[in-house]
Image 1 (cartoon, rainbow, N blue to C red):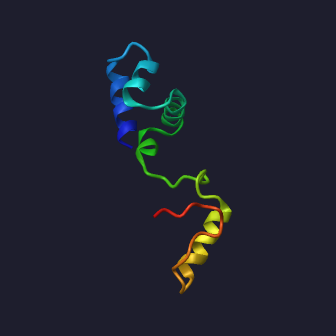
Image 2 (cartoon, rainbow, N blue to C red):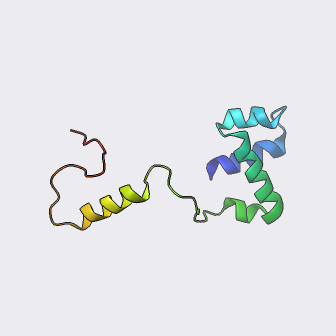
Image 3 (cartoon, rainbow, N blue to C red):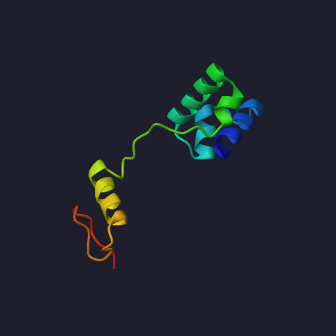
Length: 90
Protein backbone atom coordinates (compact mmCIF):
# COMPACT_ATOMS: atom_id res chain seq x y z
CA UNK A 1 0.00 0.00 0.00
CA UNK A 2 2.94 2.34 0.61
CA UNK A 3 3.94 2.15 -3.06
CA UNK A 4 0.39 2.96 -4.11
CA UNK A 5 0.37 6.07 -1.92
CA UNK A 6 3.80 7.17 -3.17
CA UNK A 7 2.76 6.51 -6.75
CA UNK A 8 -0.31 8.73 -6.43
CA UNK A 9 1.64 11.52 -4.69
CA UNK A 10 4.52 11.53 -7.17
CA UNK A 11 2.14 11.29 -10.11
CA UNK A 12 0.17 14.29 -8.86
CA UNK A 13 3.34 16.33 -8.20
CA UNK A 14 4.75 15.67 -11.70
CA UNK A 15 8.24 15.00 -10.32
CA UNK A 16 9.02 12.55 -13.11
CA UNK A 17 9.00 13.15 -16.86
CA UNK A 18 7.38 9.81 -17.64
CA UNK A 19 5.37 7.23 -15.76
CA UNK A 20 8.06 4.70 -16.68
CA UNK A 21 10.63 6.77 -14.75
CA UNK A 22 8.25 6.85 -11.79
CA UNK A 23 7.79 3.06 -11.95
CA UNK A 24 11.56 2.58 -12.02
CA UNK A 25 11.94 4.89 -9.02
CA UNK A 26 9.28 3.04 -7.01
CA UNK A 27 10.45 -0.40 -8.15
CA UNK A 28 7.11 -1.38 -9.67
CA UNK A 29 6.27 -2.84 -13.04
CA UNK A 30 4.58 -0.48 -15.53
CA UNK A 31 1.70 -2.97 -15.75
CA UNK A 32 1.17 -2.56 -11.99
CA UNK A 33 1.02 1.20 -12.50
CA UNK A 34 -1.58 0.71 -15.22
CA UNK A 35 -3.72 -1.47 -12.93
CA UNK A 36 -3.48 1.05 -10.08
CA UNK A 37 -4.40 3.94 -12.37
CA UNK A 38 -7.37 2.01 -13.77
CA UNK A 39 -8.57 1.06 -10.26
CA UNK A 40 -8.20 4.68 -9.13
CA UNK A 41 -10.16 6.04 -12.08
CA UNK A 42 -12.92 3.42 -11.80
CA UNK A 43 -13.29 3.17 -8.02
CA UNK A 44 -11.61 6.18 -6.40
CA UNK A 45 -8.78 6.55 -3.94
CA UNK A 46 -10.55 4.81 -1.02
CA UNK A 47 -10.81 1.56 -2.97
CA UNK A 48 -7.21 1.74 -4.11
CA UNK A 49 -5.86 2.27 -0.60
CA UNK A 50 -7.83 -0.53 1.09
CA UNK A 51 -6.26 -3.90 1.73
CA UNK A 52 -8.77 -6.12 0.00
CA UNK A 53 -8.26 -9.87 -0.13
CA UNK A 54 -6.78 -10.94 -3.44
CA UNK A 55 -8.17 -13.87 -5.40
CA UNK A 56 -4.75 -14.76 -6.77
CA UNK A 57 -3.68 -18.37 -6.48
CA UNK A 58 -0.20 -18.98 -5.17
CA UNK A 59 2.39 -19.75 -7.82
CA UNK A 60 4.64 -21.37 -5.23
CA UNK A 61 2.32 -23.57 -3.18
CA UNK A 62 0.64 -25.96 -5.59
CA UNK A 63 -2.49 -27.87 -4.53
CA UNK A 64 -0.33 -30.99 -4.11
CA UNK A 65 2.14 -29.21 -1.83
CA UNK A 66 -0.72 -27.65 0.14
CA UNK A 67 -2.33 -31.07 0.65
CA UNK A 68 0.91 -32.61 1.93
CA UNK A 69 1.61 -29.64 4.21
CA UNK A 70 -1.88 -29.91 5.65
CA UNK A 71 -1.39 -33.65 6.25
CA UNK A 72 1.92 -33.01 8.03
CA UNK A 73 0.48 -30.25 10.19
CA UNK A 74 -2.46 -32.40 11.24
CA UNK A 75 -0.35 -35.51 11.78
CA UNK A 76 0.93 -36.59 15.20
CA UNK A 77 4.17 -37.74 13.50
CA UNK A 78 6.14 -34.55 12.75
CA UNK A 79 9.40 -36.30 11.83
CA UNK A 80 10.68 -37.49 8.49
CA UNK A 81 11.09 -35.83 5.13
CA UNK A 82 8.76 -34.50 2.50
CA UNK A 83 6.74 -36.93 0.39
CA UNK A 84 6.22 -34.58 -2.54
CA UNK A 85 9.70 -34.20 -3.93
CA UNK A 86 10.74 -31.10 -2.00
CA UNK A 87 14.27 -31.07 -0.67
CA UNK A 88 14.54 -31.18 3.08
CA UNK A 89 16.78 -28.40 4.34
CA UNK A 90 19.25 -29.38 6.98
